[in-house]
Amino acid sequence: MAFKVMLVYPNMRGMNMLPPAMGLLSAVLKRAGIEVRLFDTTYYQSVEGKEVDSDGSKSDRLMARPFQMPHEVTCKTSNCFTDFRAEVQRFLPDLIGLSCTEDMFKLGVKLLSQVRDLGIPTIAGGVFPTFAPDIVLNQPEIDIICRGEGEDALLALCQKMERGESYDHIANLWIKKPDGAVKKNATALIDMNANPLIDMSIFEEARFYRPMGGKVYKMFPVETFRGCPNTCAYCNSPSQVQFYRQETGHSYLRRKSFENLRRELKFYKDVMAAEYLYFWADTFLSWTERDFEEFCELYQEIRLPFWCQTRTETITKEKITKMKNIGCARMSFGIEHGNEQFRQKVLKRLTTNQMMLEKFRIIEESGIPFSVNNIIGFPHETRELAFDTVRFNRQINAWDRNAYPYSPFHGTPLREECERLGFITHADIAQSFVVDGSILDMPQFPRKEVNNLAKTFNMYVKFPESRWPQIRQGEAETEEGRKIYTALKEEFIAKFWSREPAAAAGEEG
Ligand code: SF4
Image 1 (tube, rainbow, N blue to C red):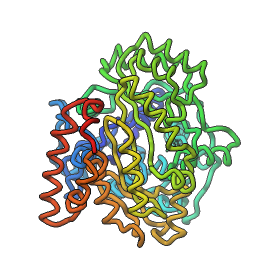
Image 2 (image 1 turned 45 degrees about the horizontal axis):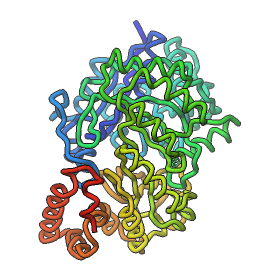
Image 3 (image 1 turned 60 degrees about the vertical axis):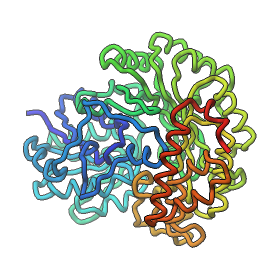
Image 4 (image 1 turned 30 degrees about the horizontal axis):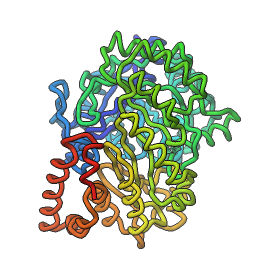
């Protein structure tokens, strides 16, 4: 009988992005004859009594346009914990593999606790186990962690377990021993070009649909790069680059070969009937000039609309024109903070506002709709400084914009700063910035203020400044405040979301 692995993805509802890592791990295991099943919590209506809905909550706070999910997507009303136990008892896996980011960790552990009595070994991988191994291994529900890339490590673990051999020396694994000691192995990089195509068969059909700009498409993720060349202080990506450089002496930054990319793109187009693609790369346009040309040529064969995110520094008029011609339908950019000095000093993003405005103008002229990302509630930030972000956004004719409360993820320099300042302890686990808001208690910018400003951010950006006192009233968590907020929200949707951004610009303050 084949070795069996149950993968667990403790996602929150409405985080509709398909997890490519789950499909990739499944493909790697199945290629070696291992049986795989996925337990994914994305479409549970309610988890622990909380009706969390990430995409719904974005749209509720005017950060994404309202959308209607297609009939393929229905929510499960049953209890995810009892369902998980029943699923494990039916499948009887030899190993349970949890993959999670920090904000998904608590739910992941709670799921594992439902089946601990069955004596099945568990492994946790992903960004959080990589950067907070002590916290993760401290959980009695977790036996092994994978630090860094999991494709080779998970396969080797399964094969060793199946053969009844010791798995004490597998690279990337930290293993809890019966006496409480931890066997820590060295880190290794995988060859991403040796990876198979993502296994789509483990996902429910509902997972293929995602909203984009107010419409829902059958959409698939395409990995082009691993890693990001930039060094933003609040992000895990540079920490990954640094981690691998220190541990292996090699660069984590790698790109997929064009041969593999073509194979994958054709699979999504011809086999999966994709309507839209999203490129899963931290900074999409970090190609060399030659690679970018090659990509454009390759994509001529595909021509499906696509979304990507990149840094404004990578934009040129020539590149944007080419992107438009091959099917780029939407882009996203990080602004993160509107105060240039603050952005440079605290966030380590070295761009200037002037340069960003010039680049946004190029994108606007191309006609490609774009959205911008902002963050509120950084350490050292004040409400006044946050309004520099509001003011800067008012100068940019983005199709959509979001502003989420800052989340201090383990492994980032800003997390360390938060701990140093006493806003948080090392053991505190960051939660979903989309649904749960800020977890920092900062005297100069209290959590409530941060969350309320994030909620009204788009109103401050789009309505004339003369309306700001009214919006301030709408921030209040009182009956009157909620009434004002609802009225402003309705006005916002009618005024700004019923037309293209260029047409709406004249109505801004
Ligand atoms: S550009 Fe984006 S992915 Fe890269 S380090 Fe900055 S925030 Fe992270």
